[in-house]
Length: 121
Image (cartoon, rainbow, N blue to C red; front, top):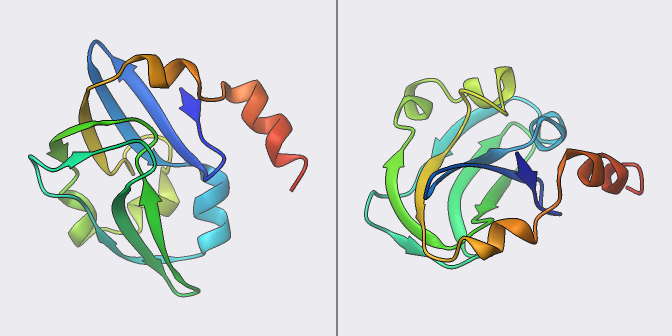
């Protein structure tokens, strides 16, 4: 699992990257009440808006940690947005991307680096 400074995570299996938000981000948002996942077929560049998550506190964009094409979206979040709070780094994923530039993954933080980054906030 790799992480961004915007609190997204990515897990890569082959050329498919699963993307979600970190437990820290879910905690900061509070109770998630709505999630808008991307359309399958959408192409995103690293840093582009990928999804939208709304909580009782705020609405936030979820940014693509890597570039690629959306090959699957987690439609279950529409009916159960609380999944993002319950299991943010597992079942609360937003989308799966077919990587267009696998090297981008190497530039992201590993868990130790992300934990160190969190300690500076």
